[in-house]
View 1 (cartoon, rainbow, N blue to C red):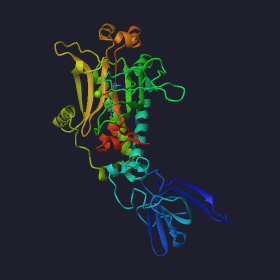
View 2: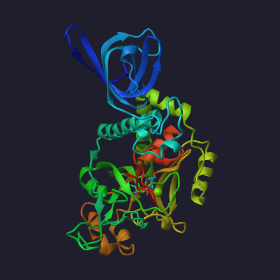
View 3: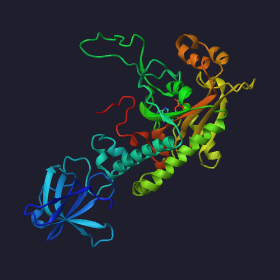
View 4: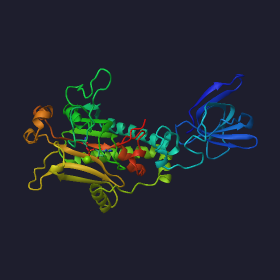
Length: 414
Ligand code: 4AD
Ligand code: MG
């Protein structure tokens, strides 16, 4: 049953087999003869009910304190929980002063309030549910790719390329007594990665189907509710792909698989969100977001693929559709209600002559052009913003509330 993880031991007089439950107190209720506690260890939303005689009561047993309870596990007379722990001994492992603790018993704190306490917000129901969901969704995405023959690649965090060419890079420099300020450790300018795509393209030229799921970084100077400076991206790259339909099929399959898995495995946590968290159908206000909003609404508030963007709007790697005079690129974005752009993808330009005609590529990306010289194949891929995915399925308005420790401009707490 979903309660504290319990261990068994013989109690001091060795006569009874006792159960030990550990966790943090979520509620305390004293009656004449008994005191009732709810103890939660983060394994689920459900807390373990502890029943103790009032002699075991202790003023240090407060909301938020850490406890170890030893007792006999019994069938509960209440329908809400299957079992309860009849306490023989309660040990307050860590006190918690209720006056100073920022969360108060029986109060429902909003996501915006708890965001002020990044080191403590995992103690709230809403945020602990969120992080369990996030963990489950991560596992589901990995299993989707494993089940479908993709090889996982750990693409580098430090890189010398700017995949998206948008110039939103964090530069990496050494620090410490051995280094002068601004010293160039790598002999070339090095950055935190904005996308693992180019490295995945290298690997798709040997393994056909590859993916990566890791942190990416963008120095976006925006305070929007859908941008972070550090976010997780799920990226896939598939060789011998001829059409955007092949790509959108994988995007859709992965989305469905992960979402069905989360809905089936995290029923209580999802319910909590759908009951208590305001759905995020408010939109950002820049023009691009407004366009996305219009399109999603126009199509009946469902996920929408937008394909074949103007060529000049897309990065150097996007494949030219060669449909003059419009000149479009074989690129696709997936827009979803409440969030807007969730995934960006494209077929990649695999033709050496077309790629090398793009300005500047010969100097900086000669290795990338080599991929087109040695066994080049039609290929394509996409990247899904994992935090935006969580916003979308849970209806969370602000991206800062779906990540354990948000990083954004003017904020790097902890
Ligand atoms: O559209 P983007 O920039 O595409 C790429 O980086 C491609 N190289 C991916 C690929 O084809 N392998 O980013 C992909 C997704 C966006 O659709 C968005 O969901 C998310 O990453 N994203 C962000 N999420 C949070 N904060 C930010 N600052 C984000 N920037 C992009
Ligand atoms: Mg994009």
